[in-house]
Length: 610
Image (cartoon, rainbow, N blue to C red; front, side, top):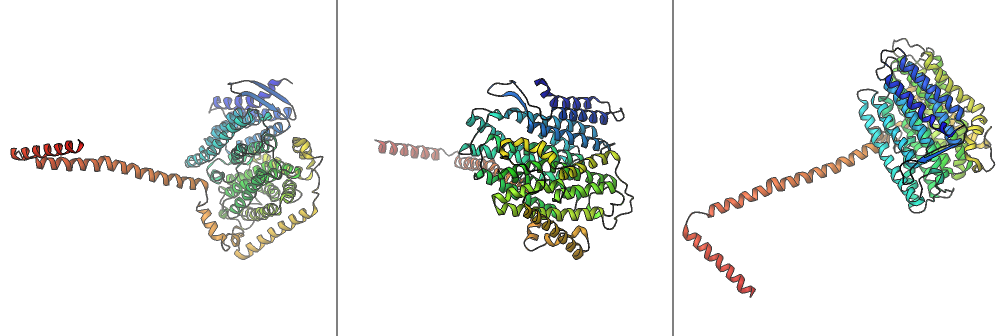
């Protein structure tokens, strides 16, 4: 196998995007055929390249900026996962976006996004990686914008939030180049002391922002409403999560020397725990199918960051395992949401209900994915969460409590969602039918993988995850049943409590949609929720308020300067000239007196000077 094949994961999506651009509009099924063929070829290529070790490097622009690409276990795994999701979601989109005006641009942006992810993952040079990384920001903006006439505002919000975090990452790259003397990723080995710590923080900001972590998250719930539904399944739920967590792992495990007692490790764990809790608390009270899922997409990132941040083998394995598990069940959940929206015409939970009988396959896929994200055994999410729990508990009880509380709230919100959308009394008179087969196949495939990766977790752990860590495993093998029985019992108890909580909420309010209202309107929490729903805590809105404050101050100074030059100076000049005019009466005697008085003043001045 020649080194040139490492370019194929970049070339194939590029050719697909170009082919889509020149596909005639009048050609029936033309864009769909090209999109499916392109993503299918990319998937076959990813399978062929999996576990290959290839390195390519050539001079590019000087100053140590080489065109360096590296394919190894970790990068080939991410490329394979991205290829699988891209193909399945493209197949889904051929039905979901059928007859939509923006279908063709969506496929083009999807192919370009795949190109950017593959390029960023393969890049072994930080500047080259940044080139592809920023390209994904452009496709993100484009995919949101085509959603509807109101989507431009959301796209701008996403662009600003992610763009600002990327600026931090650029500064971090500059610091790494200064401290390490190289920007070749595989050659970087820094500590977090002094400027190294600042470089670490700046790089982490870029990584967790791309993954959708707090506080760089607030565009995601808005995009869930404004962007095309498949967008949520392909970017926030899968591609960006894979890329962000991949880079987070590279920073924490390869580029910097971290240990379990370092402040950097604790910082990551704190960010992970906060993201888990705050995002899931917002998900708990959502009344829209897609917005609820979007907050869970944020919350689940916290488990990945927490697991990797523990820096203990079990936690790292759990965080990386949760990365791929999350991409699966969250994509599946968004696809079920898209099916419900297409068939029922809405994702407003107040207008849904009783559709399980008419959409049984979608409902079953939802149940599997919801159970997976909630950590119900024996699905894949249960095993990855147990590993994260184990690592978190090893580092401190407070982190384990945050993680397990997040699971309680996750289960509670999905019980509400499933009950309100699929069970209960049917809302409306419209007849709802099952989604088309092209939408069902991707959902069934991903749901089946959720089951497979749970019942046979040795398959992903032994072939995808654990080989990445090598010596870091310290001889452990985490496949099979969890070794900590107490943690499993605690998980089962928490899930049972979530079920009891749901039953209590339904009996109290009489509606599944209000099953969590007793938490929403609890003392203190009620006030905080009110503020959160008014976007009081939204970092983007806070930033806008700060900008508006300084803009008002700048406008005040501008008006003050205008007043000095246009009003004060003019009026003063008019006053002086008016006074001079009144003194000039034409009387020669007065002029002689002024002249003599002036001469006397000058004479007195001269005498005092001598």
